[in-house]
Picture 1 (cartoon, helix red, strand yellow):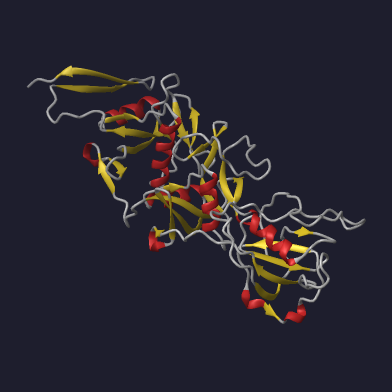
Picture 2 (cartoon, helix red, strand yellow):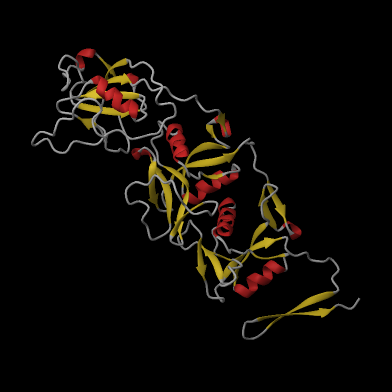
Length: 412
């Protein structure tokens, strides 16, 4: 048996004996995982005696009051399907067990501390009972290979490729979605249920930058969270990782880690995500029919040159006035695998802003010197270039490095 993150609770029905001298601190108990319809209880059944190698499990130990029924009650109240007893005093709660390690009943022969007439496992072996948990109906399947599950108006889908954060977001974007936005206890519970049996850590859609935790759509984290202790307190770019060994509670980690991607995909989900070329001379790209037309153009340009490059391509440097703007630009860079530092249109009060990949895998907004050499991130479709203009732009490079532009009438 193996359990995840836990929360303390008091005894249910039977008195909790004090820890005897020299026994150390009694451990806390099974994780509190909200499960729908947990009050409708089915039969509690004995499944047998099983070999249980030592694992880093969290458990309840009661030195004078442990019984099978007490263990089953405690695990049921916390939304677990199975209760395991060992050594006469220990209760573990779990969603799965391994039936292939079955042993003879004689290998689980240690009397229960609360009722010597019953056995509570063996020394290192576990007796397993069902708790009577009535699981909610299985959600309908969705996503690639029908490997995802429906949750409200979207599809929760786990990509099993282990990738860095930027590539994980790219995987979700290419499927038409984004790394999952976990904003309610109900969604966290659905994710925990969906990931039951997964033993690897998982990326979700939350990043810390500009001194705030922000979802991938640019909205700030508010209300619900499921942080491990102290893990929300950071002072650099960090990313949300769901810890498999902590019942998928929230941890932060750096861009260099490699994990699976938990995606929110649209419903109904279709097998392809169309990418359309757009803009003047098809210089830009947009995902789907409603996305912005964006392009990364050139390299090694100062701010003035980048602005000119966008304008002669029928657009302007992409504005970045809000967190939502930044999220849109970030996702464009993720989707197309761009890892080049680029100029943006700034936010009005600070025009010389760029998105830099100094940390290699996550674009950070920076205030650059206007002479810094970067690429250009352009929002296209804002301007139309006429095929037969009545005037032309004359471009002259001055000796001091400035680019001079002016318009003159064209002789027809």
